[in-house]
Length: 492
Image (cartoon, rainbow, N blue to C red; front, side, top):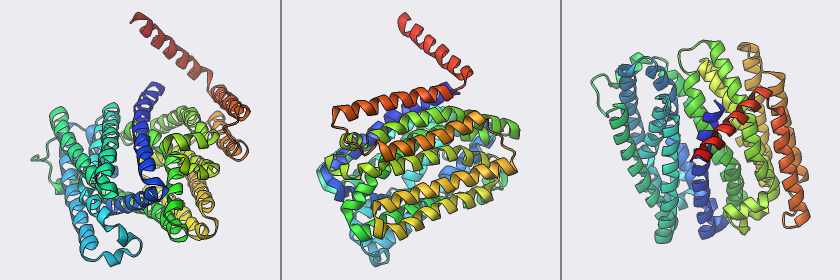
């Protein structure tokens, strides 16, 4: 399992680097104000996409995974039925969104109405974006997580090129038109690939929408719960940005976006591993004990990986912001740790969320997840006008901590989850160490050689401590895999 996590993570890291390069280009070309505009428009696009697609791109993994374990005919029929439904919903939503933007922009309110030229190409791309997410989930459900991560890498590279071409040719509007071209091309390519490699055509005799509902009677309930949680997630993030935009302007919103994106890189690396590897396992027809065992083993491997990726963002925020954005974004460096720790909690509780979904404990999953997003959004709405980005960061941290705690309580009391003391200790140690480093070490000037050396030593010590928390059996596996890689390299 660790080898799979590392392999998928490595591919995803390359995709993240491409996404970060795209962010770097946009930061240099547009500055904090331009990045602030992009963050608001992107969040509106995401919210409308979630609303009109009824969460089918994400809910489909559960039903496609189950259908895949029941044979190819059931898998093919479920795929075609859900694909047709997704096309119908996403195209309807795109048309309604475009109608509002073009003919009734006043309904958007200020300042969103000022961004209508950017929203038009964004809304046209809603069906293609929804299909790309659905196709990625299909590959994961078909037990092809590596192919799914490679697809995400190709998409990230194409979007990076599109960003350069689009901004240079037509500014922010050009960026969204070039994005549209890329996501449509990807959707067409993935559709062709699935038809050739997995025998999944767009049309099939057993692929009626009604038949998909018959084979998966719980699809509406599950999609509805994901719909509510997705709406709460995207809505809270829009509230966060709108609250700051209204009180402090586009430049501060751009600084906030850099902090959120920097921390969000963890989720971009780790969530696909969860969704492409763990989630399909937990949604198969296997005993409950096997699901618990798989999730806890996955979480055990996840903790050191999360720590190794998160610590540099907290120890060297100034350097990372300059490398990935520009010196104009360094002002937010002392606050980056709040968002990073919040995302670490989100990465860990993502495993718990997958477990609840695998157990069909959907109402509690939905209620807890929505509550966390409401706390984040409402807290930011109340605190941002007075405390700015600090208030937003604290709201993120409190909302994600609440979600983590409630999910853990539900799994231990209702589903009899018993995690090892080593695992619980390692998670607590991870969070406390990252918070302490953010308060005490992160704000120190990295340009002083002594400070830089201190941070490097602390990072090395932190990695060593994570290794000490790893079981001897797991260390032995790592060493064996290392020997195999060295031997393979030597033989070449």
